[in-house]
Amino acid sequence: MDEITIPKPDDWHLHLRDGAMLEGVLPFTARHFARAIIMPNLVPPVVTAADARAYRDRIMAALPAELDFTPLMTLYLTETTDRADVAAAHASGLATAVKLYPAGATTNSHSGVRDLGKVMPVLEKMAEIGMPLCIHGEVTDAEVDIFDREAVFIETVLDPLRRRLPELRITLEHVTTSDGVNYVGAAEANLAATITTHHLMINRNAILAGGIKPHYYCLPVAKRETHRLALRRAATSGDPRFFLGTDSAPHVDPLKECACGCAGIFTAINTLSCLAHVFEEEAALGTLEAFASRNGPGWYGLPVNNETVTLRKRPSAVEWPDRIETGDGPVTVFDPMTPVHWEVA
Ligand code: DOR
Ligand code: ZN
Image (cartoon, rainbow, N blue to C red; front, top):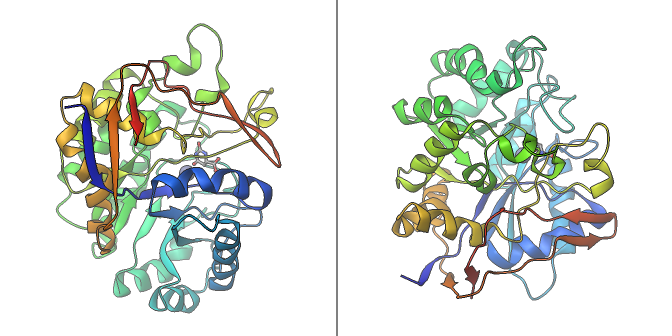
């Protein structure tokens, strides 16, 4: 098979940033995706319905006129989030989900949650109205090894939360481990997971072998090869609980290439090409449609897109720019470290 046509995909986890960066990166996503769940970790974060409305307006203002794209907004959960505001944002269709960042887990997460007890009234309300909670699933304890933070989070935070509030619909974002895949796969209801493109393509060697490579650093950090293979099995399985969330997270190069570089990999440009490559390697091109275009809408209760996208395999490798220029500065594009022959037609 050297050509595949699928319903236009959606990206169920995306960082668009704001201002000049938003303008620089949005067209790449809007060309290949119909909708995306927009992460709220701006500075300051998108906490209230009013914040989300204003941010959505800025996204739509930055969208080139010839492109069709729907941002699905999220609200950043803080310990002072107002549950009536959250419920109203959901009821009006403004906010699709709420995002939980454990405070300190990642970029701009310091306003996140330290004590889950403080946000239980909001979570109870969300369970009642059927509003999903997107979770960055890593503990932040300094004594927990960074490669174990997802597994420890599942055991010590996620599982107790699900037992306490089984009706809450939870999206475990960017799973990176076999622990995560197995936990989601064993859940009876109300749990799904996104998987990024880069976690299907790289393991931790990409960051650390042969020199330190900041452009492969993201959070959750890529794990060892056995975990990458588990992610590939989940993504290609067709299981409706697993779907694409690219976590495309642009940072300008000076903030990546320094003594304390930011976490984030910019994949919006080449995600679909890379995914076709991965699914072909796994002899699973037939389930790409489920992963990229069907399972996400199914979970979020939205229609599958009517438009289609065709991916075509060509003899020579597809080329992307090494970096894009934005008004904020250059942003390096994800290098899959292998020739990729699938292009978006
Ligand atoms: O690598 C990441 N980058 N992981 C996150 O959780 C946040 C994101 C960002 O905002 O840069
Ligand atoms: Zn993210």
